[in-house]
Length: 69
Image (cartoon, rainbow, N blue to C red):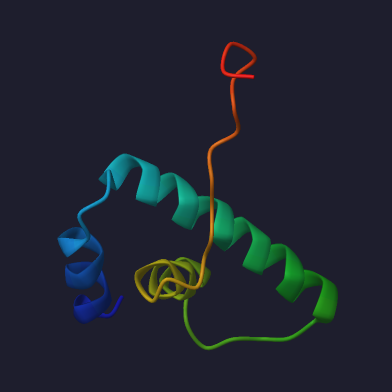
């Protein structure tokens, strides 16, 4: 994994646990897309997902709980 990506990820001011969850879901999404398309990539899917999170390309939001509605 590219050290710069990991350093940028760790420097983000958001909750690291949540960032890991978001990156994990993004990696699963990318993996599924690659399986469907048959395309091959030359780096790990987790690296791609972490880079996308660091670059702000992965948007996420929290669902409202029933109490908040």
